[in-house]
Structures are given as structure tokens and as C-alpha cells.
Length: 132
Image (tube, rainbow, N blue to C red; front, side, top):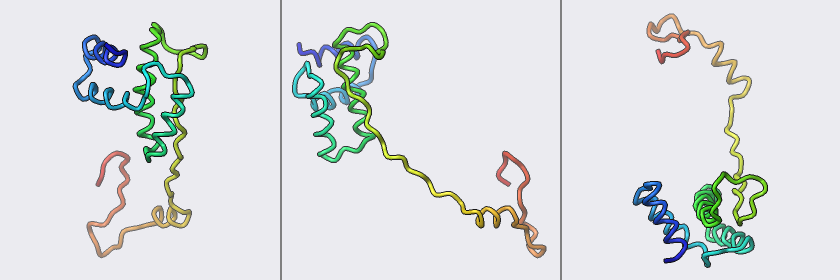
């Protein structure tokens, strides 16, 4: 039995992972070309993923699954710390998306808005939690 199959089997029966997770691990571990990859091969996996158009967020999911398998293979009983010597991948840096905010004049318009006297239903809510 291969190491990958033993990893999936142990996860399936001891951690009670779902069939969807089993298929996810099966598909993710196909990125690795050998059962005991070195650090250089792991970096090559990331390069191949990025060349095929996988974004950072998709890469993170693959990296988590690969790191999980590598940690299991090293038989580490405790959580990894800075001194761990088994091969692992670092998370990719994601681009930060800065959402547009209101300008000062737009905020001023919102704050100074008052209902017109003609329209009875127009009012500004003073509640903090309701949606009047």
C-alpha cells in the first residue's frame, strides 16, 4: 500500500473524514510526483500550479492538503514549530484587495440628508440595530 493510500485510509477511519474529503485528498496528491518529495520538488509543484492558472486561494487548499500528508508521513506527534525538519510548503502571498470607500463629500451628503416635508415616509433612522 502506498503512503498516500495509507494516509487517506487513516484519515478516513480514524478522523472520520467525508467521502468528499477523500476524493479531494486523492486529487490533490496527484500534484506530487513521488511519495517522499524533497523541498525542491515541493517548490516545483507550486510553480506548476501557478503555470496552469491556479490562483493563490486554490493553491492554499492544495498546500494545506500536501502539508497535512507530509506532516503525517514524518510521524510528528505535536504541532509543527520553527525547528521542524520535515519538508513543507509555505502559504502563497495573496494580493490585498482594497475596497473603495466613500469620499468626504459623499459622507457629508449622507450625514446632512433630511427628509422632505411633502413625503411622509421619508425619514432617517436613528436606531443602531434595526433597518427602518
